[in-house]
Length: 166
Image (cartoon, rainbow, N blue to C red):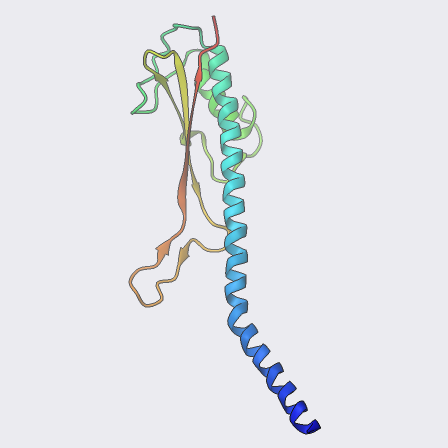
């Protein structure tokens, strides 16, 4: 009787090892996916905070009713008075108006930032498009079913703010 109990325990240990072999890769994949989603949300939060700071700079430095020669919103771009466009872009990308230091997000450039004026509402809108690239790999394998699936995508955010200057 004691011999069959030992044999049953050995089988249970072997079964546990097989179960762990099956479950461990799935658990690791879920942990890595959770970390990547958290990293993406952190980058999006950093992006929108910087964008709010840039919109606030524009809103406080433009005069109410001033023609800023910004384009209408569907086509972002345009120019701002007194080098304000460069100052706002630098604030969004580098965290300071001078454009000194490293970018707040790796790969973010001033070319990713655009501005427009909301017609008739006296608002300025700031749009930023940042390409999120996962840390470990940028595509899922095809597993024999066609081309690999890319998992990098653009994080796009747009913020409007009323012009505060009088």
